[in-house]
Every structure is written in C-alpha cells, then in structure tokens.
Image 1 (cartoon, rainbow, N blue to C red):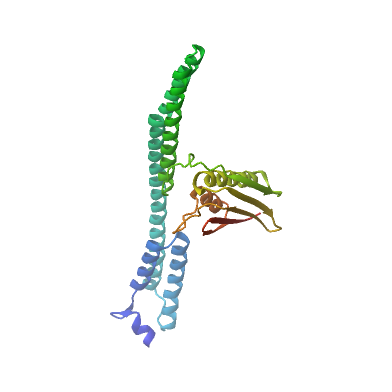
Image 2 (image 1 turned 45 degrees about the horizontal axis):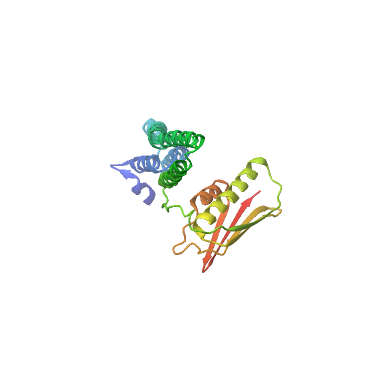
Length: 273
C-alpha cells in the first residue's frame, strides 16, 4: 500500500520522521508542546503499524518506547535550558543593578552631598550678613542642580531606551491647568491615576510650551478614561509618546491614543476598572 511504502525503509517502518518532529518541537516549542507531539507520534506510529497489516511485535513496541524516551530526554533538556536561561537572566539583572548602584553612588549621591555642604556654607554667609556672596553661591547651586537634574533625566531615559530631551523649565511658560476628576476605584489604581496626572502636568509644563491645559478623568461603568488637552506646540512628527505615561498605561493593560496638531495636543487613555 501507498501508506506502507511511505514509511518503509528496507522493509521496516522508520521512526526518523517522528524523531525529527519531536526534536524540532523541542527546539522551537515549549514543554507542553514537546509532550503533546511525543504522545501523538507514538500513537501515529502504532496506528501506521496496525493499518499496514503488520503484526505488532516487540521490535515495533520498542521503537514506540524509544520515541517516548526521546521525547522525555528532549523535554528534560528543555527544562534544563529554561532553568539555565532564567539563571543567566538573574545574573545579568544583578550585574545591572550593581552598575546602577555604583553609578548613583559615585555621581549623583556625591553631587547631592556637595550641594548640601554648599548650602550649609550659604547659611553661614547669611548669618555673617554676607548677602551678596550667599546669593552668588545660591545661583551657582541652582545652576548645578539644573545640570544634575538633566543628567538624571538623561540617565533614566537611557535605562528605558528612550530619547532624551533637555529640561525646558526656563522657557517662560507658566501653564494654567484645569483638572476635573470624579471616580471611585481601589487604592492601587487611584495611585496610578494620580501619578499619570502628575506626570502629565510635568511633561506639559516642561515641553509643551502651553498657556493652558485641561485634564479630565471620567468614570465610565466599564473603564476609566483620562483626556489631556493643551494649546502647546504638539508632539511633532513622528509622534513620540511620553515614555513614563506610556509604560504606566501598558503596565495597567490600558490603551493610549495621541493626536497632535498645530498648535495643540490631545492624549486619551482608557483603562479597565
């Protein structure tokens, strides 16, 4: 028969095709897929023997057993590979944490310690009525704090893999915000919502160059909707969403939509309750 001829090699039914299927699944699939393919391969092999009119003898049974053993071995090595990859990931994360800790300690913490000492010197100058010297020192400290602020933002954005833009706190815009909110949610979601509002205010003030902005939080029966509108310069092309807001919305399983025009911007966030 045609079925028999396909699976015959030198007069015997070959198991190479099934072994290949099991090995390929072990390379590309997960552990459940390996088990499923192994069981189906053994069943298919036995069905082929029965449909071919052959007698189920010990050699055929042993080959079926070999298929099961091969699936078990491949499954075992798959489990070990997953454990190894998980361990490698943990070690890489630990190394990165140590690098971040050293960077924060050697640069930003030292800078904060220096600023604290300079502020103490300013206090001594004010007590000695050296007002001009104190004001000069405060201006220098303010400049240094602004530089450190930009460095921290640049470093944080490098960790998140997003582009960095310098601070625009001195752009001369004092945006007027109108916030309307009425919702009833749990404490965790409420904290996320308020953090999104705070981040929206900070981003609009620093980058949008807007005169006014409106933030609304609407409590629908099925979802929470946040709309953010301003009359600023917009996002430009291509649109680059605020990564802090986008990451928080993604964490909550929500959706973020952005419309940017001249001269305005509109963000709409929808999250399940």
